[in-house]
Image (cartoon, rainbow, N blue to C red; front, top):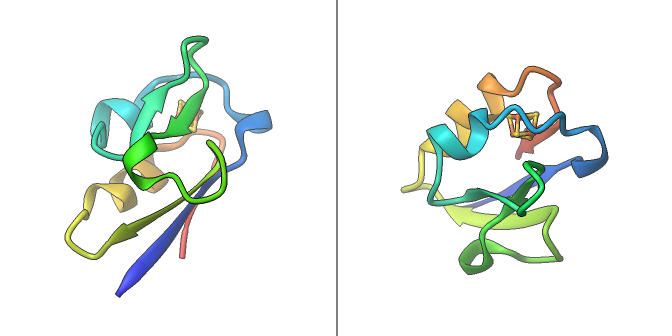
Length: 72
Ligand code: SF4
């Protein structure tokens, strides 16, 4: 099963948590704001799709201090 990952980048405060905890899926876009890495990008830098084997997306979702990451 695939899961969707969405980052509301406008609300991102560039804390770095998501890409520290889950660098396979999240990265710094160069300004500190998070984006989905190219490998998993689906619809631009805000939306990605990952397989069940990548569990760290939930850790990233839980760690975001402004709750702008949604895993569904
Ligand atoms: S954890 Fe949230 S606020 Fe921090 S860099 Fe990631 S998306 Fe932005």
